[in-house]
Structures are given as structure tokens and as C-alpha cells.
Amino acid sequence: MKGTTHLAIGAAIGVAASIYYPFTVNNAALYLTVASFSALSADLDGTSLLSSKLGKLSKLLRELFLWGGMLLLAAVAYFYYIGEPLSREYALISGAIFLLGMITKQGVIRNALVSAIGCALMIVGLSYAMNWLIGLGLFIAWAPWLSHRGMTHTVWAVLIWGAIGWGLEQQLHVAGITAVSVAGYLSHLLADTLTPSGVRWLYPLYKKSIKMPL
Image (cartoon, rainbow, N blue to C red; front, side):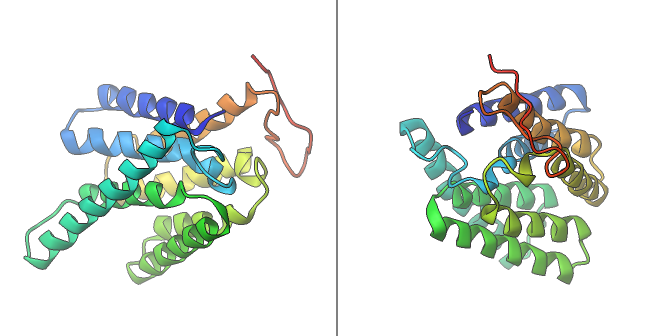
């Protein structure tokens, strides 16, 4: 299934969470970002999150993520430099958007860039004793070199992603982050199950694809 479809499903989950949980602008933006990122993350193992042959919409989304994230991170750096308080949620959202722009590129160079970003996240996580960020960095660094629809498309990956989401929820004290993370990631696997290739949910214990093609 196309990355743009996964992204749309993730965004819908984020909107639903914003309605269900007590509403604030920061929390709504956080739910939307986490759900969308989670819905795409299983395809970190592919050559491109938004499909190998990028169409006009996919290219536009990639550029929006990349340059939008870059501008947001620049704003974060500026406010930090002048000593203005800035919410952790805003910094997290800015980093996630920029990361999406970076990881939607293609090929070996893309894989190396994604792994480098993952390693950088691990270093930051170690520096600030943020276990969830260490786990996220390890996932991002490792996933690009796996075969497509392999380990990242399993129930084990959902559990790992849920643990990362739980750590983030404890860090930010925002209810629902774990549920949104799991729902976003799980939506990707469920959507891929509806394609002819299916998903090997229990790989490597059970290596056959489970599929219910529409």
C-alpha cells in the first residue's frame, strides 16, 4: 500500500485522538505527529517511505516535510539561543517532521542518512538518560538495512514501538501517546495485510504471509 495512504490513515488516528483526549493545541499537534510518524515507520525498511517511484504528491510531501522540518528546527535553535522557553512538544514535533523529510529519500545514501539520524538520536538519548529516545534511535538506525516487509512488519515490532511510545508518554506526561503510537503502527500492518503480498505478522516464527486482499 502506498505511503500516502498510510500517512492519511495515521493522520486520521491523530485527529481522532485529539477529539477523544482533553484538547490543547500542543497535544493535538503531538497526537497528529506521533500517529502519522508511527503509521509510516514500518516502511523504514523500504527504499522510500512514500513509494519507490515518487509521484507528484509524494514528492510534494517529501519536500514539505524536509523544508518545513528544517524551518521548525531553525526556530527551535533560535529560541534556545535567545533563552526563550520552548515546549518539549514543539521541539519533538519539529524533529519528527524533519526526520520524515530525510527518511523519505531513496537508495543507499538514504539508508545511510537514516542510520546516521538514528545514531544521533541514540547519542542524545544517552546524554539525557531518555530510554525511549535510545530505543527510537536504535530502531531507526537498524530498520533501513532489513528486507522489506520483514521484521518491521511483525507483531514484535508493534510491541517495541509501543514500548517507545510508552517511554515518550512518561517523558511528556501526555495521556494517550502510547495508544496513538501503537494504533498508528498497527494501522500500517493491517493496511498491508489487505494487499496481495500480505504481512508476515509472526516472522521468523511463522514465515508465511497473512493476507486478506481486497
